[in-house]
Length: 122
Image (cartoon, one colour):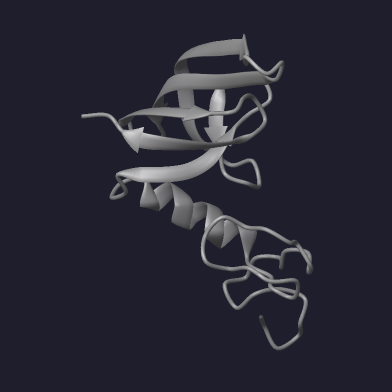
């Protein structure tokens, strides 16, 4: 953080304290990060990563960071739902996406508005 304690040395406004979970390596009840810098890091990571964890937005149209920054546009999405033999319910969402750099990805997750894993398409 900057000397004044109101922002970061990078010049961005500090994130709220006590956010319990942030994708990446920063965890703990007292941790805080610069969300803008972390969003930039996640966008840059798309250039080299083979697999990333992100979020499928509520509309199922884009893949985002935890804070809502766009990582990719969803180009195809399908939802599979079924009842299990013991009376439970299982659902899965599969998708194809094109990231902000133009690279293709495929992924799965439990549904819209939730965390997903996506892998670089070959």
